[in-house]
Length: 256
Ligand code: PEP
Ligand code: MN
Image 1 (tube, rainbow, N blue to C red):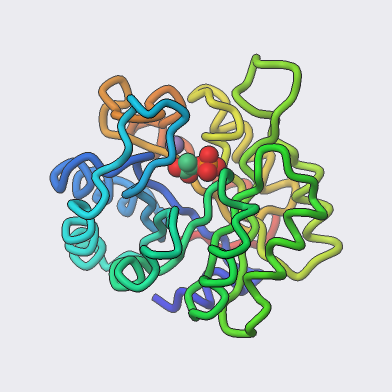
Image 2 (cartoon, rainbow, N blue to C red):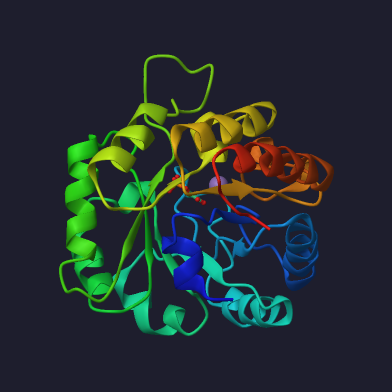
């Protein structure tokens, strides 16, 4: 698959899916198999997790490099994973196709500068309290050297209301599509924090003009080591891709 074409051609739609955290080879392989079968083109999976509590699962770290690479090769799927420290860059570049910069690191300009020197696409998540202007300026750091391209990922912002984990700012998606050149990816899992809202918000994201989605899914969400409450189970994941097929047609976008 031509990853650049998938990410940057406006007739395509990218579906990135996988677990919040990679838990074991078996777990990741199992998830990869059903997400590919349902139609996802890109595999996600956290190796390093930045958690609010030091006592929460921090990700497998180095232990996951080999197994992630094995599964990505077995499945012949591009892989996106979060980089949390510039010192991880060269080793992580061996196993990932897209670097994800997490919400907590959107303002980490040294990390952005480091990634700008490479040539891998960077999925830049919006800081949870970042304005659109700050977010776009962070993307300019990524593209400053002219080799790495940025993809903006709307993952919800903080508000006074905790009915949902964050507030999905779909107006920012429509705005960015009209006023910038960046592809925009929506993360309905972190934006809502609720499994029951992932499908409706995914469909709404397509209508707002999103170029892709990044969705958390787990074979058994109730056993997930992180974010199970916002992860679709395999059956729900298939339901998502079925519904996406319908709406993408209306917007002249191809997923399959
Ligand atoms: C994630 O995608 O796993 C993640 C931690 O997201 P965010 O940085 O948006 O909180
Ligand atoms: Mn998560």
